[in-house]
Image (cartoon, rainbow, N blue to C red):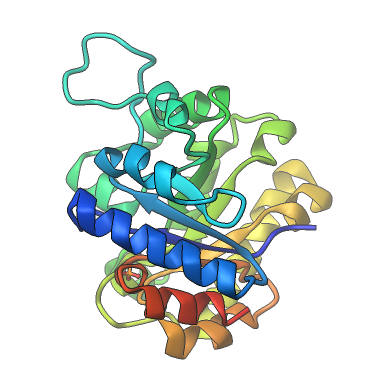
Length: 251
Ligand code: PGA
């Protein structure tokens, strides 16, 4: 059966010292009180090694927030999937809306990133979600369907089985405006149906689909209670141990 997962997305926040302290605090909290779900933190590239050195990855998983769409070579400033894997991180966020919006990531580049992540044993947390105008004009299902199909449906069923999806309506990210639990459930069930059409019911049932967008301790339990919401991808609230643990405890 699919896993419930709460994953933090630190984005471009914290110095190394601050990040190491936060990771230690979350790790200690999880040791003191065992979580009823997998817990992961996705951190800036600079933080991967020092954070890996202070956490127990059997308790707290570690991931990057991106990786390159090339294997190696003359790509100044890029960080490859094999470099991420060499830090002992096991996850990588791909296709976050901020990367699509500000760094021009397309389904084409994302297919390369997904392939390289998988080839290096990383589990992609693949993000999808509509912008406000698409929510308002009613095209959101088709937008999300296209993101899933174009980004992932070149994969074999076996490889698709290694993907974690994160539905993040762009209008809910960092805005304090959470999707209602019903809106999230409707979309998650829709996405699961799209996966079932392509890979069959079993693969669809085994795929973890996380919700992201202003998820916090006060709304996590209601969201996670929905049958197709298998956890959360947490931005702002992952930067404070108490808030992040409050969301983990919603399971
Ligand atoms: P937020 O971000 O929780 O701060 O809304 C979620 C995300 O972008 O992954």
